[in-house]
Amino acid sequence: MSVAERKLREKEMIRKKIIDAALQLVKNEGWESLSIRKIADAIEYSAPVIYDHFANKEAILFEISQDGFKLLLSNIHKAISKKASPREELKALVDTYWKFALKNRSYFKLMFGVGMPCCGEGKMKTEFGALQDIIYEIIKKIIVEKKTNIESACYKTHAFWSAIHGFTSIMIARSADVPQTMNVSVLDQMVVNIIENL
Amino acid sequence: MSVAERKLREKEMIRKKIIDAALQLVKNEGWESLSIRKIADAIEYSAPVIYDHFANKEAILFEISQDGFKLLLSNIHKAISKKASPREELKALVDTYWKFALKNRSYFKLMFGVGMPCCGEGKMKTEFGALQDIIYEIIKKIIVEKKTNIESACYKTHAFWSAIHGFTSIMIARSADVPQTMNVSVLDQMVVNIIENL
DNA sequence: AAATTTACCTAACAGTGTTAGCAAAGTTAA
DNA sequence: TTAACTTTGCTAACACTGTTAGGTAAATTT
Image (cartoon, rainbow over all chains, first blue to last red; front, side):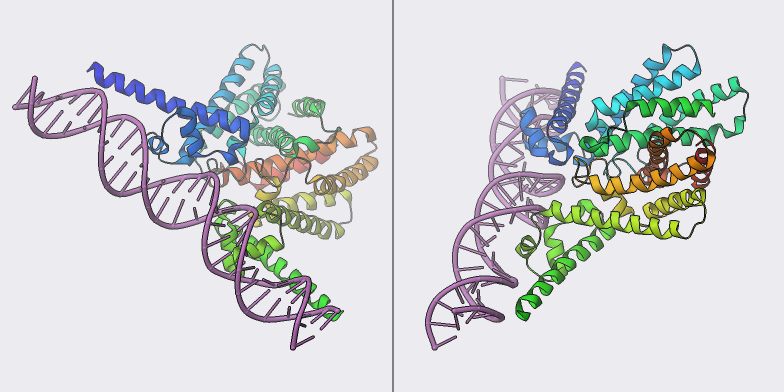
């Protein structure tokens, strides 16, 4: 059965090549100018071959955005693991979130793009959920530490995520036109303030 | 010179028809499936006529998103004008922002879509700025009232907007998949909390 | 009434996502 | 080893997309 295995491996290789080429194209030219034919060109196959691996173009974007979530979550876990206190964890999480958006605009746009075809409509339920859970657990720890109202943990999770995601989104959306008054120190101060009031 | 005037009026009419038809199509089928030919069909002209009024498709989307900003700002001004205290003004602003996003998803996506071709790159500088200024003025008033640190007004404006925009964006992006724990009362509570800590 | 401008159309170009159908290669069975 | 079958990957095509060129007929000006 080694032949079948090799074939499977080869198929997996092409699949990976498609995703890699697509991501590279998106990084260079933006997701709006990504085309099946360009991907096909990049991997040196004809266009229809791509449909042996993906149902359609949207499925490719979907998979890329899922990879983005995996990367973000992995980055966050790595950053958090080094920290001693939940407050430091929360700060590290925000720092990672922000740096991820800045360094991986393509990923970020695909993952959180408001009008994006691949996110929304419940498709990213687990990915969004995972992120939310991490925040929730840290906030709960801080609340326990501070002995404030534990029942507010859920609300505070949403509020916290809203704040950091809103800041990041505005920064990415406005890109060139961000006023100087809105810089990373604003984000830092926001986190400090939120922690104070948890 | 009445002929020229009539011609100008007629041209303006067609221009308006294009925008109206485009907006209607976007509302019905989403901005991603909007096409020049569909607009042309809707206004009962051939496709190239549209290029007598707009440089390209992007220009149409750009104008629509500008209309969206005008509508949002007008709604906010209307809502604020009825309120007596700056705290009430801020609450009304958030309420209007949220309701606008909910009722005009198409507009909202065009205006704030992270990967949107028409926003970003400094194109919406004045529109973003106007919105920011309104928030800034209200927050300044509250700070004066509370006699807290006035120098923090700028930072607090960004923090405030980040929070409400983040909340709204997540709600719109996740659409069907918003957890029940993240509802409008979270937004209300957020505003109350922020005002408390201004 | 003639000349000129404007309005508008059809046809076309180059590109898009996607599918059908075929040929060659690789794999399995007799 | 040969015959049957499966997989692989191609070309060609369909129905779209944004956009431009070029021509015609109508409206306006001289």
